[in-house]
Image (cartoon, rainbow, N blue to C red):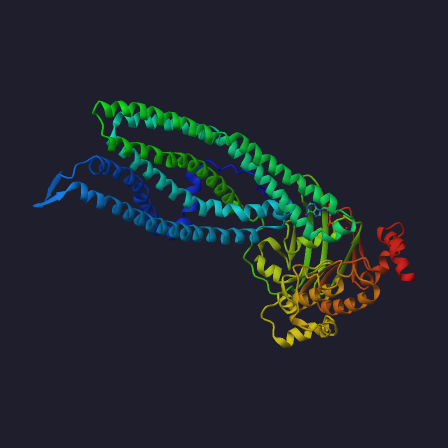
Length: 606
Ligand SMILES: Nc1ncnc2c1ncn2[C@@H]1O[C@H](COP(=O)(O)OP(=O)(O)OP(=O)(O)O)[C@@H](O)[C@H]1O
Ligand SMILES: [Mg+2]
């Protein structure tokens, strides 16, 4: 399956049926309120026409009427002029109040339903992100994923509810106002509507352009987020190499790009509004000239005319909005398609169902071939059997595949061919949680989650008792260091645990691995960043961790490698040599002997 996300679009942007089917489960729980919202939106739109409509009786009966005109209503005589002079202004205020109340209800319901949908989308989206494999994170930039995560769910759900509501309001506003137009004069209504249609056509013409620009803007925002992330993760390198200027320039370029995009849109869109007003003014002039003729020939009252012109003026807003809302709806669907593209990604690594609680016998790499990218083999016909409680050291050239070998054990990646077995069972048949529960990792650079030191250690085993915790702190040689901290084990770590030194962080990671107490331990360059003195401490901690465990250790230090039961030399993805230190140093022209002569011997001599 294709894990690589496209920067802007996904293929399903125009498959409305598919998208609606996908979003429906999120809408369903709040459907009642959405329907209620839309029901309120209808009178809200229609009420626009009421004000325009009320002008007709006001002008005809109040302004131009006579005090003697009467109506008979249920046996009572009503003086029309004085009655309407009272009722219409109050009526208008009443309607405004009603409209205000409906507007409030509508906005409240829109926000409520929109946020509910967008929150559940976000939660599911985040769950999806955490379920995806290492490969997904290898090939997609953080900026791209973040920008999709931060804006798309809102656009796809919250904004779509808002768009639909506004659409309904505009649509019924239009219906109400057109009804008022028709009521006052059918001929004039036709003229008005034709002119209005001409005025808003340009909106639909430039929609494509808007979409192109909004896609390009997404790319730019993604790039900016990536640069932002680099500033965090690469801060030290940035400072050490004086890259601030270069980084600033990189950012400037993106900002400029965004500016150009925005302005190119403004350039193309900005002239539309004045043109629309111009066309509309022609329409109004036409209506006035023709209306005048109708009034003089007695075919229309002054009241009808005033009411007509008011509706026509009011009509401009909903007509213009409708065009915009249709464009928005398109944007909403594009965002929705991007959200569901992420949803549709399936983890490539699927769990089996066999539960293991321990390693009883051996781990076997059986004819393992592996490639990260198609056609670029990284491990070739790799065979290795590791017995329970054996310590195996992996050495070899840089980029030879040592880290890759160990990353296959917890199935960060799956083998391309061949298999890895635990006690004879293919690891792909194992329950993936139980598989990973059986393996602890300590890396060179150990990630600390935000929280306290204690919380970071307990990640290895949240149910550990205080005794167990104190025990691993001692075994990881952390106690002395913790006693120097004013908050001790409750010291809060920064986003990346930067308040700890490399060696301290490593010991926290070792404590985390110890408290997990899994039968298999993987150490990938776990001591390489340390000076001799702190290495001695960390090494003692590691020795404690490795007790009675099956251990894969990747190291450069001779002491670590020497103490291993066996050493596997991995050269360019192949198992070149296998044996104990004493056996391998005797092999003339052997890789290990060469490595030993080149680096280890120097260390030994020291
Ligand atoms: N996530 C990845 N995506 C694509 N290629 C990768 C990935 N990780 C490693 N590689 C490639 O796989 C090869 C083996 O890398 P690996 O990290 O296993 O080497 P290593 O033996 O651990 O090297 P070192 O001693 O420098 O840590 C390298 O050529 C590397 O470029
Ligand atoms: Mg490595």
